[in-house]
Amino acid sequence: QIFALIGSLTGIAAGVTNACIAYDRYSTIAKPFDGKLTRTKALFMIIAIWMYALPWGILPLLEFWGRFVPEGYLTSCSFDYLTDTFDNHMFVAVIFTFSYLIPMSLIIYYYSQIVSHVINHEKALKEQAKKMNVESLRSNQQQQNQSVEIRIAKAAITVCFLFVASWTPYAVLALIGAFGDQNLLTPGVTMIPACACKFVACIDPYVYAISHPRYRIELQKKLPWLAISEPDVSDASSTATDATATTAPVSTTTA
Image (tube, rainbow, N blue to C red; front, side):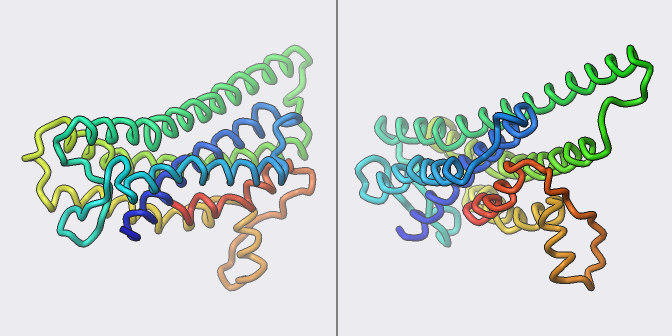
């Protein structure tokens, strides 16, 4: 029960955290002057994430709605998606919506908006520069700052892609168990998505460490023998970038 409770809380919190990171990246890049992430706002988002995840661990733990049962080769536990009752079907459908569908939809929306904004902004700058007969309207400092923001967004996109890739098979597994042919779900088959989720939780921190410029700078300072060549990030970088560098481990440790 404790294993399933921790897995449920951290798994759902990881998805919502990734959605919040996507929102922060969108606000930073699309609204650089209005989208800064303050400490108060970051704290509120963290509290909201865990309050959002809490019911989906407590309800099945108390067997008020749903329950936790062993899965696969009985070496791990998760919520019951095999019991053929209307109440259990409703629980699977609702937890699928709130723990997978909503976070994934937000992730896709915010990152698609980032891509759209960057493309439109670059197009507008090129057209204006062409009218003024100059090569670029950006200063070196502006180019550096935007490059940092884009790199952080790329790291966040990678982590969110890993989240979607790892949890989608598990979501499909639960839907098949509740509404499809349960004969397809052998112990071996059910263990594959479960192991994928745990594996991604292990590699998420490395993705941030390798991709995030501020993490690379800290590694460069503390472990110079790694020979990491990362230029110092200017103090002019956005506050949201600083906040993301501070709050990013929340996503990776709860995944």
